Amino acid sequence: SEAAAPVPRVAVVVFLLRGKTVLLGKRRSSVGQSTFALPGGHLEFGESFENCAAREVKEETGLDIEKIEFLTVTNNVFLEEPKPYHYVTVFMRAFLGDPQQDPQNLEPDKCDGWDWYEWDNLPKPLFWPLEKMVLSSFDPFPVG
Ligand code: 8DG
Ligand code: MG
Ligand code: MG
Image (cartoon, rainbow, N blue to C red; front, top):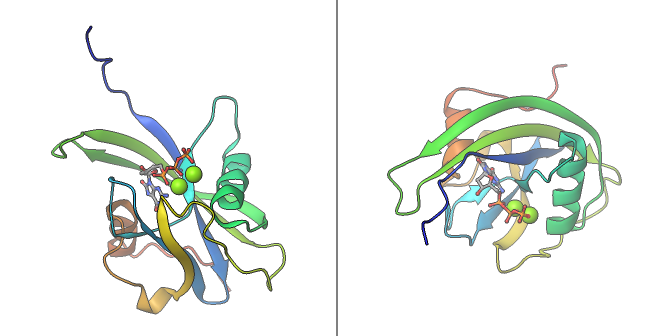
């Protein structure tokens, strides 16, 4: 039988901010393997960006987030990959409900572990869609 034609997918990812730091984890998935990325995942049918952000962060880290806001969206097309893919990536911002809560690595098959990284001293390599944002001088922190 014929393979289904590829379609763009929607991803929701979260800049979870604590002080001057952001939560990142090193990916184990084949897409962006061994690069540092934000928590996040696929938007489910009928879901709001805010609910998707809270759900994915909870599933992947156990953290409860609040003040969830839309920041921006980017179009990420990787046609040269062995498995070509196309994500419309929605970037959200959020903060910890309880600033004392620590991240847990709840999906160890997908991530090596979560940690807080200074925005001015990010780890390398960053997952390419995130690297693009940093290179464009995008700043997820609130003004003031
Ligand atoms: P799910 O089954 O939980 O819905 O998906 P997931 O396993 O959590 O998917 P994911 O790979 O973490 O996220 C889905 C896609 O989002 C990923 O393949 C590419 C896109 N994406 C970006 N930037 C980022 C990012 O910084 N972090 C994450 N996690 N995904 C990102 O474009
Ligand atoms: Mg997920
Ligand atoms: Mg994920």
